[in-house]
Every structure is written in C-alpha cells, then in structure tokens.
Length: 167
Image (cartoon, rainbow, N blue to C red; front, side):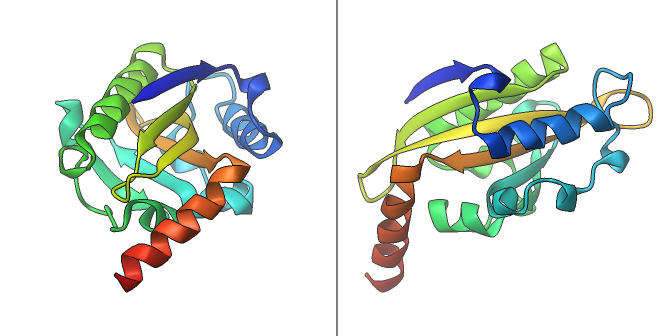
C-alpha cells in the first residue's frame, strides 16, 4: 500500500471546507471538544464517507462509532461498533492505526492519500482527512475521518459494489 501526505491547501474544496469548520470549532484550543462538532455542519457530499473513531489504547482496539454508508459501498460491510483490529485488509488497518497515532501525537489534522487493492483486485486511491477531537479533560478521544474518492475512482466503486452484490 502506498501513502502520500498532503497539506490542507492541497485538498479539494470540500475537504478544505471540512477542515475550516473543524478549525473554527476548536476556538483557541489545539482540538475542538467532540461535543462541539456537528457532523451535519460538514459539507453534505462528504457525509457518506465519514467515520468517527472512539480512540482506545491500544490503538487497534479503537471503535468505529460512526461508519458512513459510502464506506460500506467501498468495503462491502458496515464497521459500526467494530474495532480497527476487525478491519480488512490488514495492510489498510495498519496504515489507519499509524495515521491515528500521528493525529494523536500532533493533536492536529492529517491528510493522506492511500492506494490499495479491493477484494476484486481493482486498485483504489482515496484521500483521508483525519481531524482529532477531545473530551472535557482535553484528551483526544475521537477522530473524525473523511474519505474522498478521486473522481476517476467513483466508477470503480460502483462496479465493485455491483459485482459484490450480484456475484
């Protein structure tokens, strides 16, 4: 699996808007409190590919609190309530765990592009923006991840979804 890091200004307009909302919500803190974040305030087109992780120690036991319907179309199953250790492919789970640890260590947003293979063998490229949130004691206890498919990848997902459903 290949990974490339992005700066916020290299992201799409929608992901930049998502970051801007997160940035406004944090006020003068390093990260916003999770209670101040309203998922419906993010660009609506991104909602299907949003995920919220409840951060645990070890990081692999972090739980998917929210798993958008678009993520189910990509991966073929709903991960709500499951842990990162349950996620497949394992190479992606490891990459996500490393990214979440980076978010926690920096207490800031992380934007990365991932390339990996679907179960159908097709290659997929996505951009993930990960935004940390804190509890009332200022500890990072949740991370919002927003996945954006590159435009040419949307057709691959539709074909993958159709093949999976009807094979």
